[in-house]
Image (cartoon, rainbow, N blue to C red; front, side, top):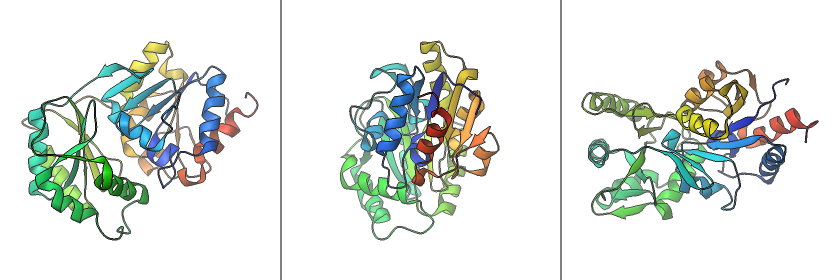
Length: 286
């Protein structure tokens, strides 16, 4: 690789993390070596800020975080850019999810994810038992952890800022049908949706995505998109891949992602693909 990035954007699920949502010591080590050489490293993820540290060390030092697919951008733990969904829209989406028996998690801009107590029964039932073959192990483990201890169950929806709504079902045809219902809802209220698998969809503010979050970080550090690399795997990474100068696909990436990139890793996320790729690219510079 002849490209010399000044900044690197790294997706988490399916990219940095293995299939068991773990960030390995090798991957952590190569990231810090790169940063010591003056290259900015950002995590750019669909996860909320709190969710990042479900899988990353709480003392992880990076140059910035783009969370909730661009809804909130952080530098040194402080928000540089923030968007939020209206409580009214969140309530409408929850009502639709309930009527279609769709699992959902509402992620506040600050604080822990929540769902309504009245929906606890069907949501717990959906995640009980064995993992369906068609659902990825990482997404299933995340839902099990959420049901077991991460979701805060509320009687009513609190009036506060909300970054996103994550929705899931183990039946991908059911999810496809519900996404059509969300599109109908868009005629009344502007919002956007993004999916990282056939089993989920996330609801966010219209016009917000990973690229808009990266833009805020690059302006802060005075780095151009042309001097930036990004590594990702799923379709919610498409805006990021189109924005940066040197997009790289994981070996396990979707076909849509692979069609947009300059290069692909030799290994999957479950084989420490990011570590091997970065180590090979920078071995003579570190």
